View 1 (cartoon, rainbow, N blue to C red):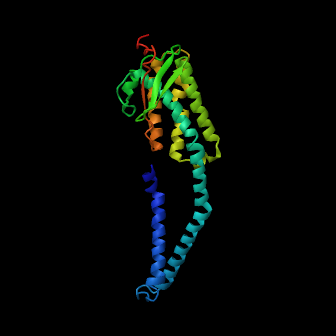
View 2 (cartoon, helix red, strand yellow):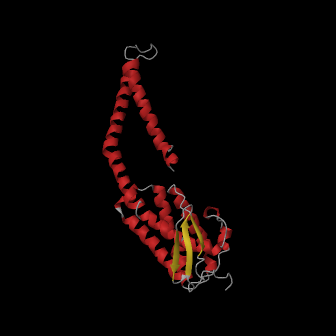
View 3 (tube, rainbow, N blue to C red):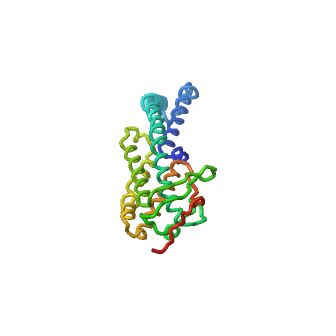
Length: 254
């Protein structure tokens, strides 16, 4: 994303115009200052002065923009990174991991999180709202694992769904949201209104057939991966059963 911003048309145009302006001022004032205009261009001197004045005006505008707009905007973006990226985004990631952890656990797959496909989500075992939840969730590559427990799967999904939406709502009412990268805000908005969070989880918690919601599960997974990519992070995790209890995965049959 940083390279994309660096090579954006607006930035390229800005640096080209800035370079051309400095070069023109240098040529007109220091290199061609005593050079008479060619005979075929009798107004060369006047034209050079016009170009020089335009370039000086452009440089003054750049300096003015840098002082009045760029520096305050940079300060506000740092505040946004601290207040939104540093506070609300980790919450969204944390609770999304919990939901995806349950789905990933139900797959009983050996694949890493980044390798999952829609077919893997079609193999998810039954999500029974009356059954307990108990598994280990650990950050990929780290030694520390966290035990995840809940009274039942329905409450588990609803709790983390509500936590995600609450964090996003608080994020969007913050005046600093306008200083957050627009691509990231767009992805967060898609997560907030995705079918799985707004429709599927409530229906699963009510005891409806989870099989009708596996497309939504995969859509939520794709949004999570897109979200972590926009953050330039690999927010992956590992899920495995709690071998210290008698909990067993729910069989795929009803």
